[in-house]
Image 1 (spheres, helix red, strand yellow):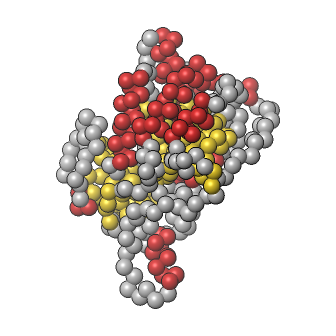
Image 2 (cartoon, one colour):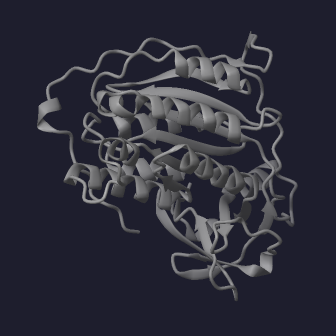
Image 3 (cartoon, one colour):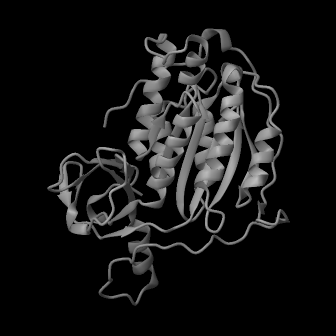
Length: 346
């Protein structure tokens, strides 16, 4: 598995002390806007575990269920439209280069548990209005209030939970509009780790959406790109990035980014690596039309995903070891298949 090397924080930012974030609420707010204790996870459509021949000890059944590795897969045609109607026999799954049995293939109707990481650092000041509009439009176009919940985090020197998981898009919108003026450095990797940890106990498809220019100038040097990807894979998180750098450049020059500086190019590579390894994608809209098109694609991908159920052979798996995943559609050309590129054995 190829990872792009991490570029450390800039020297100009070194020596700064991160402020302690203000404690945030832990309640989940329902659609009426009332603050209530965090409820039990909503029911989720999950694949059936393999049949255990001697299911008398409960621990045998639990072992099979916990071994499940869900692999969300989006299949797109040459025009970027989702391909529907595929069967389990259409897919081929390889783990570490070897073809393995797919336990089950099903269309995912499970709720989405989404966390948006909103960059509010100085580096995105020129794109602030665009970021706010993009975030609000995203929640309105992608979140299904009947089944999905979303949370909102702001990120600069440190990451702060602004709105816990809720079905109420208006509450998310108000939280975005209440953000202060962009300020501070950008601790992007640290923010991704914090968001991933927040979603780890959520039942459903875990999705992280990053609205940022993709640059990182303040994360802990120990928080490398490899570690970020590893944590995302451990907790089965799918990542999409709405990158604002092209908009900033287009606003200033009237053209796309083209030949950018080294720091911007490195940020783009990191975002591409994170999304490719988790099965998501990077979008860099420069105007409202491209923004809407990007959100339509994300919405279609989430609503029309296939999920491959893979059960590792516990006798051959060592806990903590990264395994490579490759998914293809057999006998069909011109298709783009997006899926996570690895998982970490438990």
